[in-house]
Length: 257
Length: 310
Image 1 (cartoon, chains in turn orange, green):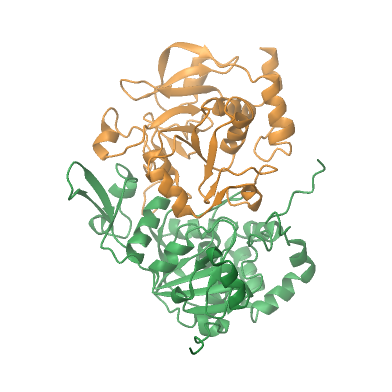
Image 2: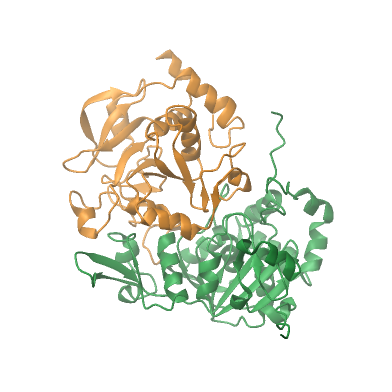
C-alpha cells in the first residue's frame, strides 16, 4: 500500500500500542514508545486514561515529552507525586489495568528476559534487571509488550525468566499465584501478535500493510500460531500521524525515522 | 528545653563510618537526586567489598563498580535512561567480580520495608513463577523467599525476608540542623531505605532554619530522628539533578558514559573527577560556575523547558 511508505515502523508501533489503551484505564507507563502511545491515546480515543509512572508521578500534564520517567519535565501538572513504593503499591493493590513492557528476550508464552544473556552467575551479558517489569506483569490487569521482531529476541528458550507471561501455559500463572491477567498483545514492527486463548502460545493476529505471515515467522525464533482470520492492521490516520509528529514527539525523542 | 545536638558534620566525619564489607543502600532515581558527592568521597577513601542493597541508584552503583568497591549486589534494576546499560557494573557482573541477587523493584522495596518495620518477612504478590525466585544468585533461595499458606486461610502467599543495610546515603533538597530533611518532586525509595538502614547519612543542597521546615512539615520526607549525619553539599547530586534546583548535567553524564566504554578511559574519568579532587568544593570549581548555573531550573516548573519555540 502506497501510504505505508510514508509511515515509519516506530509510528506504526506507537499507533498500534495506543489502540491497546481503553478509555478510563489506569495505565502504568515506562520510558519510550509507551509514553508516546499513551499520550496519543489520551489525545484521541482515550481522553480519560490515567497514567502512572514508576518514579511515583501520577497522571501529570507535562508540556512536552519527557526524556524518561525520571525527567523533571514529566512531573508538571501532576495531582500527586510520591515515590516508587507508592506507585508500585497501587500496582500490587490490583488497581492498574494495563502496563507496557519492552524486553531483550521473549518466548512463545510471552515470558520476558531483561536480566542476563547466558548463565545467571557468569553471564555473557548482564542486562538492566527486572525493575518494575516483573511487578507490572505479575499484577496489572493485562500487559502489552513492544518489541521489534528478531530471531535473537523472539527465542524458543529464554536465558533467564525475569518477567512472567503465561509461564508454561494454561493454568501456570494461577498455580504460581499471579493475579494479573498476563500478556494481551505483542506489538512488533511487522505485526501485532497475541495469544491463543486455549494454549496461551503466541499467534499472529494482525499484519501491517504489505507484510506476510511468512515474513513474520521468518524473523521469529519459535513457531507462531495464526489467529483465525488474520486482519490487516489499520493504517495510522492523518490525525494520529499529525499528533505524533507535531504535538507529541516533534523532536523525534522516541520516534526514530 | 535544651536544643538538640546538631546533625551537621563535615563530609569526612559522615562517611568515616563506612567500612570495607558493609552493606549500603543509596537514594536516587534515574538521573535524579543520586548522592554523587557522597559516592565520590566513599571512592576516594578506598572502601572495598561493599554489598549494595539497591533499587534505583544506578549512578551510585556504576561509579562504585567502576572503582572496584562492590562485592555483591541485591538489586532490581540498574540502567541509565536515555543512555543504556551501566557498563562498568555490568562488566563486573560478567567477570564475576560482583555477585548478584535479582528482584523486582517491589521485591527489593518489600525486603527493605520488612527491615524498616522490624518484621521477619513481608508478603508480596510479584516475582512468583520466575527465575528471580527459582535461580538464586549468592543468596540461598530459602533465605530469600518462601511461599507459605496464609495464616488466615484460603491462599498461599509469597513472603520475602528483610534486608537491613548498614548505611543509607541520601541526597535531598534541604534540611535544618536537626536533620529534618525535605525533598521536592518524586522521592524514589528514600523513606523505605532510611527506615531500613542502621545508619543514615544525608547530604542536602541547603541548610535552612527549623522555621522553614516547620512551615511546611508535609514536605519532610525524613524527620531528624531517622537521620544520623547531615552534610551540606550544594550540587551534591551532580552530575544528576535535584528537582526544583538543577537539571541533570547531560553533557557530563555523556562524558562518563563515553568513558565507560573502556576500562582505561573509565579510570581516566575517575582520576580526573574523583581521585584528583581534594573535596567537593574543588569538584565544583572544576565543573565550573557557568556550567552549574546553566543547569538551574525554573523554580515554578521544577524543571527546565527545552529551548524549542512553541
